[in-house]
Structures are given as structure tokens and as C-alpha cells.
Image (cartoon, rainbow, N blue to C red; front, side, top):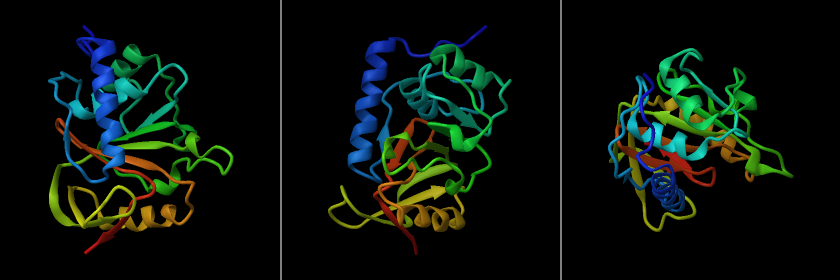
Length: 191
């Protein structure tokens, strides 16, 4: 039997979308999704909520989760989003285990930077006291993050993408019910 998605598709997706907008405007801010969600393994509740909000029949997505898995089938059932096996063709991508080089995803084009991939990354834990220093628009003072399970090498690759602004890949990191965003304009430095 397929697990239920949102209790109220309209109101719950609007609430999550507002949280995503706030997170993107305030990079590195930790946000609780504010609802309990039962998602198939290996999806975290925040990942499920974000993807149910953002995916639809016109938004191809990629994941490191097997296409035939319960998690991907749950997302497709509730959103009707097409699954792609090509990272570069995805508008949204979910990394649950193996973190991919962000340069492998679509950075958009000069004419349409909005057609880039948004990468949702599940972590082993998130804290606002860590050794990843954030700077850029939306950050008034120094802000730090700890993203457990994310290797330093990932941020070196991400720094290359930041040089191509307005091209780039926006990122949402999640753990359990918590999410934080790193838009393409946010610079990261691992101390």
C-alpha cells in the first residue's frame, strides 16, 4: 500500500514552499518543516516534503535511489514527475547516500539560469555550529554550518560552480525534519 503524502496537498505544500523561500533568502538558517511525514526509506521527512512541494509532471528528477524503489515510486505517484537517469537533465536531484560532484548537474544557461538543477542532499546531521563558513547575500554576520557526512571535497567542487554565476546549482541540505539552503550565491569555505 502506498504511503500518504501531505495531509493537505494545498496547505502543506504552501507551508513548505514558504519555508524554502525563507531558507533560500537566509542561507545556512536551520528550518524545521513543521509537520510529521511518513516517507519510504531512505527518504528523510524533509526530503519528502521538499520534493512533494517542488516536483510536478514537468520537472524531471534524478536520484541515487534506484528507480524501482519504493521511495522513487512514492514520489512519482504523488507528483507525476518524470524520472531521468541523466543527472544533467534533471531540474531536481536527490542524493541520499553517495554524494555526487555538483558539477555533474545542470548549471542552467546564461539565457535561462533558472533551468539549473536544484540538489537536495540528505546528511547524517546538521548543526549551525561547524567548520563550514558561509558568506554572501542574505548573510549579515559570519555564519557556520556542520553537515555531517558531506566530504570537504564536495565544497571544493561547489566553489568552482560559484565562479560561473549566474549559472550554478542551488542546494538544500536535510536531516530528519530539518533543512537548510545554500543558494548558488553563497560562498563556502571549509576551515
